[in-house]
Image 1: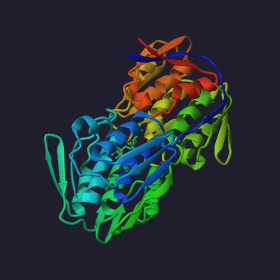
Image 2 (image 1 turned 30 degrees about the vertical axis):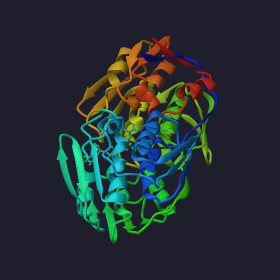
Image 3 (image 1 turned 135 degrees about the vertical axis):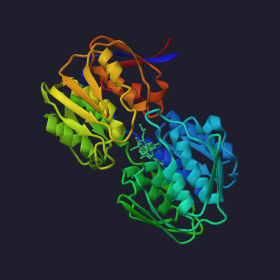
Length: 417
Ligand code: EPZ
């Protein structure tokens, strides 16, 4: 079994360069099959989630070349085969093959996707979108068969501004006949990145980044070159670590507007922060004010940073609260923070954190990706040694996390036990 061992209490100094966004990349890779020729995407992070998608591409018959951070996908020989459950269960984003295969072949067979266990995470809105475009959906034993004689543009309203449903509907609609509109669409930067990619391929999508996206169907999509945006959640994670341990820690290659909900909260707490065009520099403070956060869709405070942010709240003076409004089960990191010395209670969707409380290293478990990131930060700030198990979750989403942290002064290593 692999574990992460962290010797805590060391200051972080130097520069961390942020990788390409995992949550963009995992949509861009399946989207690439809609093209007729080679697609090159650069700045794809080397994390196990992108590896798993490349595996699905290869299973379908695409030619995939990986060279450091770029990927070249030749989708010419793709066959429309049922994606085996072992492949789709590896990650949540396998569901983007539903939209892209449906868009390309008008038929798709695959199983319910995997991903972090942070709530029930249904895909009803994705299916509602496919149905509105003219497909029929049959579900049997977790297997989805989605089929359409013809895909026709439609007006689709999403009851919740779901990231996955918005992207999946774009993928299915991009070659549909006529015009599709998605109302109450998700506005996350990853949506804009995917729409730009599809437009580079020849699609006609407008409004991405607003709550109304319009897609004029086109007959064919061609190959293109595309760049993944910086990972705002990775940037946020290291920024939070910087607020606890930074000594002029530079977080480089970021789009500051993408993490404004976080930086505003940090400023409210009294964190010393310099924000540049594509970087920020952060210093550890002595005394932070307590704050309250509510997770919201973009541009609100991202649920994916709620867990890492909890560690910072244990160091604030007084009572801080987190209200998780996106997922039903995203407090699994809390028992481990309590084990490390935090004073936290949970009341329904709210975590109440009383601080400051020093954290002490011990054995903990990463129950999901961002819970893992939270425990890494907790380990960095705690006294003594922290050992994190189940680190596969962390490696799904953070490229070179060990190297990046050691380079700025942390003491962290992967050990086989
Ligand atoms: C994406 O998940 C991200 N994953 C998540 O990142 C992120 O937490 C989430 O967006 C919100 O920002 C990927 O991009 C691969 P949603 P997604 O559809 O698309 C409900 C991470 O740590 N819902 O916006 O699955 C759903 O249950 C991860 O990197 C429905 O009810 O998120 C959830 O409560 C975890 N029906 C809420 O909406 C649906 O059909 C948000 O889901 C779809 C969603």
